[in-house]
Amino acid sequence: MVTVLSDAYIIGAGETKFGELWEKSLRELAVEAGLRAVENAGIYSRDVEVLYGSNSLAGIINGQENIGALLSDFSGIAENHIPAIRIEASTASGGAAVRQAYLAVKSGEYDLVMVGGVEKMTDVYGSETLDLTSSVLDREWEAFFGGTPAALAAITARKYMADFKVDKEALAMISVNDHLNASKNPNAHYRNKITVEQAMNSTPVAEPLNLMDCSPITDGAAAILVASENYIKKNRLEGVRILSSADAQDYLAVHSRKSIYGLDSAKIASQKALSKAGMKIGDVSFVELHDSYSIYGLLELEDLGFAEKGKAKDLVYNEIKLDGRIPVNPSGGLKAKGNPFGATGVGQFVEAYMQLNGKAGERQVKGAKNAMLHSMGGTGSMSVVHMVGDA
Amino acid sequence: MGEVSRFWRESVHRYRLVAHKCGNCMKVYFPPRDVCPICHRESIGKMSEEQLSGKGEIESFSVVHDVPSPFTRQRPYILAIIKLDEGPSITAQIVDCDPGEVEIGKRVSTVFRKIAQQGESGIIEYGYKFVLD
Image (tube, rainbow over all chains, first blue to last red; front, side, top):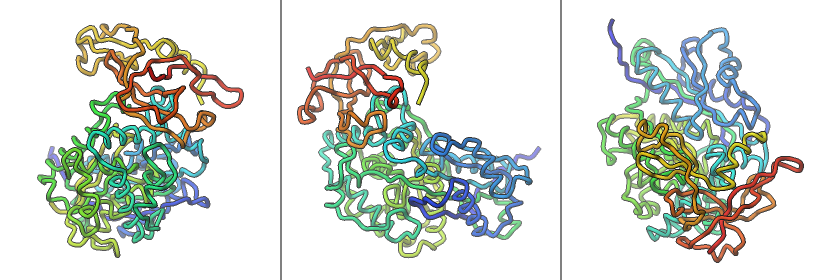
C-alpha cells in the first residue's frame, strides 16, 4: 500500500449576487453558483467525485432538510450517484465544508470535490427571522431568555469597550471599511459607502450596537472546486493552493466562556493554521474575517493575531484599508458583501481565488500572495481558519 | 415552536435556579451539566444538584430593540450576563428599572417571571429574571 498525500488546490470559483433575492429559490441559488464554479474551472461535472453542501438554516427557514440530495439532484448530477452531504456548523458551515473538501483531497480519497454553500434567508420576515437565526445560540439558556446574536455581541461589546477604553467610533470603522470595499464588488449586498457618522447614528439594534454594526439578512450562494495535484497536472490546470486548514471549538454560550470578549476558537484555529502553513502573522497579505457584528471585527483582529488584546482600535483607521498594512475584507465582509450563513464562508474562498489570481478589479489587493480566511460559528463557538495562496 | 415537554423538563432549573456541582473539583455549573469540563471522567456520577442563591452582579448588558417574535410585547428589554455569587455566569433579563439605572458591576437578585409566550394560544413560559438590589 502506498499512501498518497496530495496538496489541495482551488481550481474554480463562482457565486451569485448576494442580497434580497426574492425571485430566486434555495435550489436556484445553489445551482447558479455551482454552474459558475464549474464553468470557471473549465471542467466537466462528471469529474466531481463528492459534493459538500454548506447550509445552516434551510430546515427551519425553508422547511427543507436533505440538502445534499437537493443540491446533487438539481445540479443535474443525481445519475452520477456521487456522495452529496450537507455540512452544518452554524455560521461557520462554509469554512467547515471547505475543510472537509481539503481533508478529502489531502487524504488521497478524492481528486475533485465540489463545495457549495447556500442560504435563502428572506423566505421568512422580520421578528420571525430573528427567532430562527437565534438558533445559532444556546436555544434553552440564551435565546429562551431573549438572547439574539446581536444582543450577545452587544453584551460583549459593552464590556470590551469599558475594559479597554474603546469608543464606538472604532467599531463603526469596521463597517465603514466593509462598505467602502463592497462599493467595488458587483456581487455585494450593499454597495453604498457609509460615513462614520451615519454608522454611529443609525437605528439602535441592541445597545451599544446600531444597525450599521450588524450584518444584514442576505440570500446568496457560493461554490468552489477543490482538486488534487494529480488532477491539476493531468488536466493542465492552474490552482490556488490551500496551504493549511484548522478548526477549533469553544463553549456554545457566551456566559460559559472564560472571557466574554475572548474568541478562543479564533485564536487557536489561527495559530494552528499559521503553524501548519509554516507562516507567521506578518506574512499574511490580507484577511477575510467573520465580522457578523462590528465588535467581532475588532476582537478577531486581536485573536487572529494581528493586534494585542484591546489594541485593534489602532488598526481600524488606516491599516485595514485595501492599501493598508493588513487589508481586511476586500470583498466587503459580512456587513456589506452580506451574510448568507451557509454561503458566507465559501464566499471568502471565491474572493481569495479572484484576489490571488489578480482578478479582483477595483478592489484588488496589490501584490497579494496569500490570504487568511476566517469563518466563525455563532458568537464564537467555532472558528475555521484557512491559509490559501503562496506561503 | 416546541412542545410542552421541552419547557417542562427544565422547570426545576428555571423556576428554582438549581445548578449542578462537580463532586471532584466542587465547581458549580449553571445550566446543569452531566460532565465537568475540568474533571471529565473523574466527574461522572459525581455531579449533584446545588441550590443557587439567585444573587450576583452584572458583568455586562445590552438594551435590546430588535427582538424575536415571542418577545415583541417586551421591547425594548435589558439582557445581561450576570456573574452569580456561586461562580457561574448566566444570561437573563433585568426588569423593573430604567435602562439608565443599569451599570456593569451592580448587584442583582433573581425574581420569578413570565419569559415569553408562543403565539396567541401557545405555551406561556416562566423562569428567572433579575432586579437591581
